[in-house]
Image 1: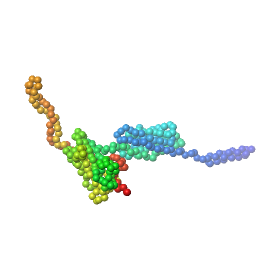
Image 2 (image 1 turned 180 degrees about the vertical axis):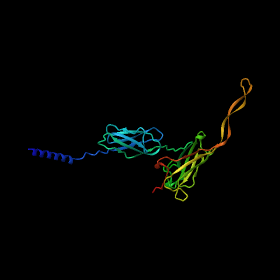
Image 3 (image 1 turned 60 degrees about the vertical axis):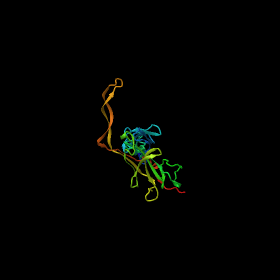
Image 4 (image 1 turned 180 degrees about the horizontal axis):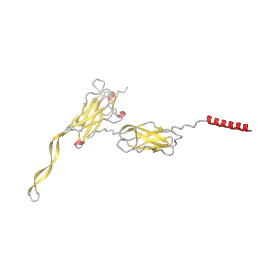
Length: 311
């Protein structure tokens, strides 16, 4: 009887041991998903949201350009699906910025931590790239006289455009004001230099100031074509406008002088000091300001030269 019981115990232990040895391992933790969006910011304005959407609840750490965003070190997602976390982000510079995020799941047993695929946000900068104190505005028009395939697209000359066909003549129109001179118009009387540099053109295009049908502004000409002397590079036309103000050699200053003033009632005359402005030469002239302008438009909408369309 004792042997029978011993056999039963041994068999039971063997079965238990088999169950332990042959059992399936615990299930591995699941890797969740984390997707970034948003970040449509304009440099210098209010903060915008970076949005992280996860497949499970947790906390999200947001980073921009490799640095953790202040206040977004551990942002909790919503409790219910979709599991969303938002971070208010104030960009430190314009241009392309890499945004990243890391999720730490609430259920640390069932889910692993995960990093989002980096998301590139294009932080907006003003299109009108102005360097103070000279504010420059630029557009381009098609010169008159083009015919056939090179004629104006809508049959109207002097139409503002950014797209041209090789063989056409591009007219740059430039308008500028100088805040150093109280916002005065930049014209030939106060401007020392005004020119446009075009990539691939050895000599800068000199701008001329003049009257154009009753309005005055600066103009410069870029002739395109297949001849060796003409601009012929198809695609984006990279150019930069530079304007240099003349040095200031004189200044108007407030002064006082003694003048004889006649009393209108008594007719008696007396001396009084009156104020007036007079022009004085400066011992140290003020160097004229320099302003430059380059388009910040996307490449698709900048000045572009195309081949002649096929018939």
